[in-house]
Length: 306
Picture 1 (cartoon, rainbow, N blue to C red):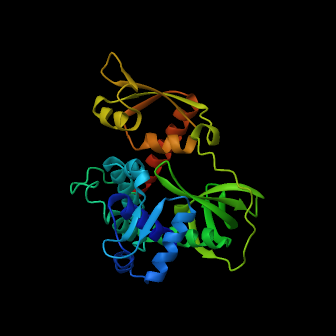
Picture 2: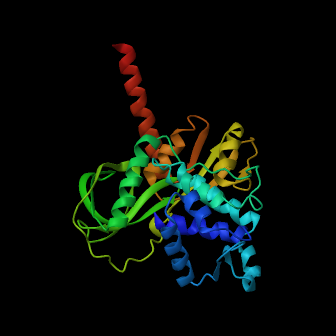
């Protein structure tokens, strides 16, 4: 793709005193004519590139802009490369790894051999997630709608959307687009999508707003939980809410006060603690847990009697 080659060329020019068209052509495995067109494109974009003919000649950023050559510091390059690695962790094509290598070229002075930041955005669903992300990326670039079957708490449905953004938020991947069923913008969780396929039709790009990913706006926290946890569950509370999230009760248990948005998610989370938590408030959550416990007892007692 042209854009990654332009970024790679710019990276080399920022880090080297001078280079040549043949060197760039060999590195990026393209013709010298292609490199010349790329240099022209960078010049049109406002990059002050100077070309010199003859012995000792080549391509470089103009001397008058030497201070701008340090725009990418070692820390900057580390952040860029860490970001690309994180994207490659969910990419099935290895595209970001190739782009990373191109950015790495010529920047040995700015990138140390020891990597200090490693980010892995993949999940247990990597084998199914990567193809979905690749298909949605293609649809976004081609301005093609996508069709898929969606599994939601309210039931299953067939959906068609105009995709605009792939979003990573709340430890999960989503696609944001215009839903033809709801006639509005919607956010769909990739792990709940099945049989994702790209439509050959082309849609006209809307004046789409950037999705508001504020959890408070999308999921108002209206359930106030007050619960006591066994002391040996402190590590989980700290991991999820921080070291200042609880108060120590007189009996050594840990008192947690926290707001929640969804009853089902809250109850499911509390059940993972087994008998190591006692809900004090609200009464609706206590009743829900009690009914679940009674139903579980019936199931296991019935199995014992059979």
